[in-house]
Amino acid sequence: MILNIYEQYNADEGCHERWKRWEQHRNTLHSVLNEQIFSSAGIKDAVILGAGRCEDVDLRRLLKHVESLTLVDYDYNSMEKALERQQLSRQEKEKIILEGNIEFTGFYGEDFVTETLDKIKRKENPESVVQFVKKHLSSVKDSLGELLDNRPYSLVISGAVHSQLIVPFTQIAAFDSEYTDRLMQEAAPIANILAEDYNRSLLSLVKEGGWLFSYFDVMELSERNQMLAYEDMIGGLIAQEEYDKIDAFFLQGGGVAGARQGYNHLYELVKQYEPYKKCWIWPFRDNKKYYIRSLCFKLTSC
Image (cartoon, rainbow, N blue to C red):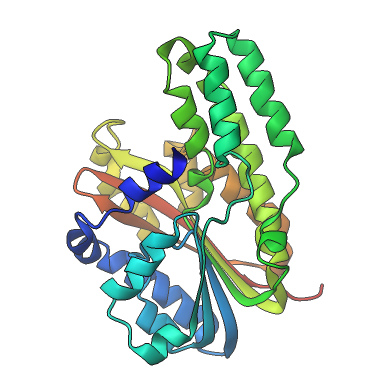
């Protein structure tokens, strides 16, 4: 069920348009990497988590600065197609390792999804379904490091992953309208737990003296939430680096589940490293954009 969702989302339709639309987004990402990392450091091995279609990363540009690159995603096929779409040479492909079917939440497992949906089909009390989900969440012990054989990397890149960790749960919640309201009451708290667990896993993947670059889609700007009308104002505050004002004016409602808490939590974990902060607007679709916050820092002994 869950893999079908990602395969549909990662389908080839619209890839060319997205690649063109996201050009400035990619340029911003690469400018951070170039200015903060590649200008002064040689990177032996890098990993991109949540690589998917790789439409927000120009793999050829990245491969010029790393000896090896591991791409990690739940959907293996989308990463394979990404290598073909970006028309990498044989030598470039030889520097890339693909790691598919990787997830640590336990929410993506077919057994968990099937059992939860069976409870809903049997019309069990919504509260019992919630308790089952919470018990499952607390029982999952896998970390990304363990799933990737505890290999540390010189550079870890995480792109808008925090907000995706809750996707299986929201799909389950939408299965039966009688359960949707009660289950969605738990979505934000669960998303925050997943985001914090993910942050700890991120840090475990970084070598001593290595780098982490993570960006977060903390706020949606769309016609649906009527935030597109404020795009120019937000853009002006970004240009002035008035990021706290954006939080105060526009994020009091909480922002994107998992993403905002993921950013705040990671910052508290790494503020002693004085992370570089960069924000921008990502033109995700014609009628939907995201306000992005990012952190980039070197993991050193304090």
